[in-house]
Image 1: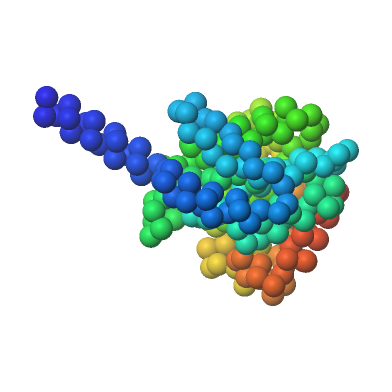
Image 2 (image 1 turned 90 degrees about the vertical axis):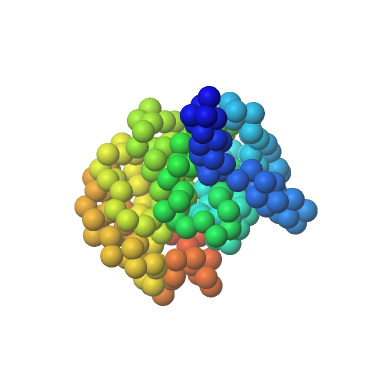
Amino acid sequence: MRYLLALIALLFGLNALASDYAREKKWADEVLPSVLTGDPVWLAQDNGHKFLGLYTPVEKAKAALVVVHGIGVHPDWGLIGSLRQQLPEAGYATLSIQMPVLQVDAKTEAYPPTFDDAADRIKLAVAFLKDKGYAKVAVVSHSLGSRMSYHYLSRTPDAAVAAWVAIGTSGAPDLAKLKLPVLDLYGQNDLPQVVQNAGKRKAGLKQKGSAQIRVPGADHFFEGQDGPLLEQVRGWLDQTL
């Protein structure tokens, strides 16, 4: 009995590590009152949890985009907020989704247990956009969100995703495993693990239409570089889709 109780406690502990739903709610409570562009939608997972998405439709859109933020933030944060609001003006519908978050002090290395949860959310977001009638769906992600997106795309070869814009991807995921065109986009002054592995990522860009672009003067968060960031993302999507 003692061992059974210990196992149950362990499972509950792992579940708590996997996602901080209370923090997600706190983000939603803070974000929603200030949203001026797009509409809030709630997507339900099989476990009953509903996560926030900010959906901006576009009539006769070129494509629809699932927008995926980085570590510990929300779907209207920083460069993600700028992209989700500005890309519709360029003809792209956007659905920016809340990704799993851990406690405030959690480091990047604590997040891999959330990647299956993250992949499930991206899958639901893609299905939402397909159900809205968009013929083409792509993913635009940043930082840890790019690692989460890779986890989904590399394990879902039949995913209804036409292209992927990966911004500030750390490490060197095996991009050659993917069947879709990829834009590996990063800043000249990006994080060391992003810049140092750029050559390895570039070597995996075998798909037709794939490209790697380094934005001069940009840091990991593209502070003060909203214009160049939007131009690179929009330009590549226009050419690829």
